[in-house]
Image (cartoon, rainbow, N blue to C red; front, side):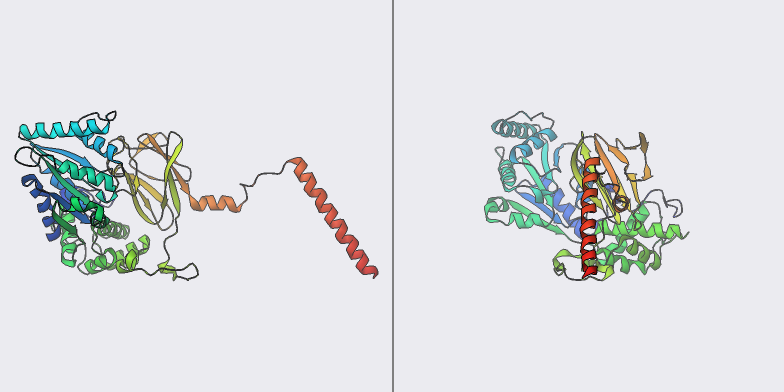
Amino acid sequence: MYTSAFKLKELPFRLSPDPQFLFLSRAHARAKAYMESTIWFTDGFVIITGDIGAGKTTLIESFLRQLDSDVVIAQINQTQVNAIEFLQSVLAQFGFSPFKMKKAELIATINSFLIEQYAAGRKVLLIIDEAQNLAPKVLEEIRLLSGIESTKEKVLRIILAGQPELNQKLDSPELIQLVQRVRLRFHLGPLTRDDLRAYILHRLDVAGANGRQIFAEDTFGEIMKFSGGVPRLVNTLCDTAMLAAFNHERDHVVLSDIAEAVAELQWVEFAQRVTNAAPKISAATTLPTGDRPPRALSKVVLSLEGKTVSELHLVPGRKILGRTPDNDLQVDSKFVSRHHCQLITGSDGITVIEDLNSTNGILLRGNRVRRQTLRDGDVIVVGQHEMLYVDEASQAHLADTHDDLKPLDADAANEEADEADETLDHAKKRGDAAGTG
């Protein structure tokens, strides 16, 4: 990669959450302070919301790393579950094997465990990421759990983190009792222009820049224009721009590198990409070429034991695969890391798979690989799952050659030939008659 050319010790703009790269903007610092307050106050929920890529997961990981040993943690990331599955997940996080328990037994076990921890002088924290996916019945179970108390105080601390849809769900009439228990509620917005500049410089310094000016001063405005200040998008654009500068044998990023990165990613300005602000387009509307949504160039098909689990279509840019719901392709398996690997697709349709320091790695053609260009038909092994790479352009070419058409059997071919001869004879007779006339 480009690290040696820029004299860095590691990649500064990885997409996987890494607490050591956490940049505490004023908003992020406030959100973290709210999380920390749950350790000292037990009289209500803390709700943290933010758009996709705003940095919620990184903030949570940083917060969890700094907790004292007397804090017992249950961290739930898989939230598309029913009430019983949720209670089982909580107990599993506490070290139980609850999957044969009925609901009454699940609740009784949680109650006993919380009281025991309180008596032993330990604090218990339940933190739920991607909480916007929780069903109302699950949220009601969480409310009931929050009411468990000793003779003096509540014994369970709860943080809910999620996308803005969580606020809409909490404001629904059926959840009014839960909302009444919310003590702090904070929305994590995008970075400001000044914060964006500081964020980029911070990540470069953590990676080993030591104050060197790697991004030209006039690039920050362009990065803001196309990323909207969303940290994940900032990372994607900066990483691609550094690759562009590296390809031009420069040790710093200039405006032309940003422009090249934007073209490769096929991005338009962030304001134009905000879904709610975009006008609805009818099928008859003709879009300028630059505004058309990117066409899928390839796809991966995820399967387990021969059965298809899901598909992910690949457009220019990068997609992350991993165990947690914040990935582009989630693989819910203990053999898969939180952020396991990434698929990087160029504007030319070529896709590269790269391991993100996962525990079990990725296997291609029987070998563990770190980074590999994919070919049509490649099968990548990820834990117990298999992922088939399909080059759409290659498949389209095969279709054009009609190689996929089934050959006619001999009888069918003879029947078609006889019908053709009869048609030809009729046409000849009509022609002869016309000539005689």
